[in-house]
Length: 365
Ligand SMILES: Cc1cc2nc3c(=O)[nH]c(=O)nc-3n(C[C@H](O)[C@H](O)[C@H](O)COP(=O)(O)OP(=O)(O)OC[C@H]3O[C@@H](n4cnc5c(N)ncnc54)[C@H](O)[C@@H]3O)c2cc1C
Image (cartoon, rainbow, N blue to C red; front, side, top):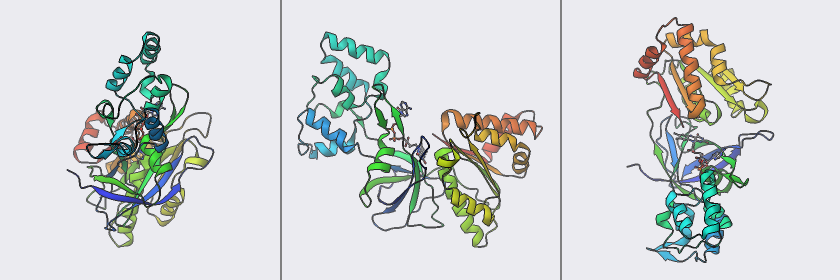
């Protein structure tokens, strides 16, 4: 069981600049108690979001449910804003909706379902499409998903400041089946809605992902997009250690995003670390700045010989960020480099060996 923390947002800055498609924020939290944090570099913070207040209110209004009405001593407002998710629907709920529909509406419903449209439907969408459907306050909770906390890699190190915790969050935004713009529940809440100083429930999810115990080891970090977050923490910690006189190995960062002008998150800090010697190499891949796409794995291949030299010398290799494509492509490039520059016939075995030594670590989602 994790210890629950009560956090408050104490600072928010836009990380992205206008012109890009993505909106990213740097958020800083403190504990309401004022106590220091005890997370380690590589850990994540789990935060409980709230549903959008306007969405929650219009649903309760439509079904004539009073916000102050209680079930088991919990108000409807609490239930539908914090305890249950109204942005993503369960099969149970959809089935219960279908049961209430007449023949014509059922045909419409079935068409949407066959097109997988309900995958991006919220409770509000269902009400708009099928306004005759009605549920009482007591019927709804068993039909809905429980609100789940979302994980965010911690982007700061307690070695620098133990009273604060930074997160780097990209606002999830997409068009749903009705061509309406939709935001991800937590990223929207944390980046757009959460007021300064309002308490928010959280816990630290301790990870195996972390810096080498032997600080003198070199590290290679591949963190495109929000994958950059834990590596800012790694670099903060290693810079503090080095300044304090500890022997610290070299640091190499591969960062990538869509556009240099709008998505070069933490640019000033990384350039500062380059000048101070805390960041030996910074290799950048901005995929949409030219006619053809360039990704972090392409930069790795370009730097294959040097990357192999670092690995041969005992470097730790880290990947953080998107699991679906990036992590797979980065692993593919790594295997190629091991084969090509290292002359290793069985690069998979070599990678397995790195994993066993904890020298190949991934935090992908
Ligand atoms: C260990 C770990 C660390 C993480 N670290 C970070 C981090 O540092 N920064 C960060 O920003 N995130 C991070 N994440 C991701 C984060 O936890 C959330 O998943 C993310 O913010 C989205 O949550 P949400 O509540 O905003 O979106 P949700 O409301 O959960 O919505 C996400 C859902 O939206 C739908 N969706 C999204 N895009 C589309 C689309 N284009 N078309 C159709 N449907 C779509 C999908 O159904 C998707 O499942 C991390 C995740 C893990 C597991």
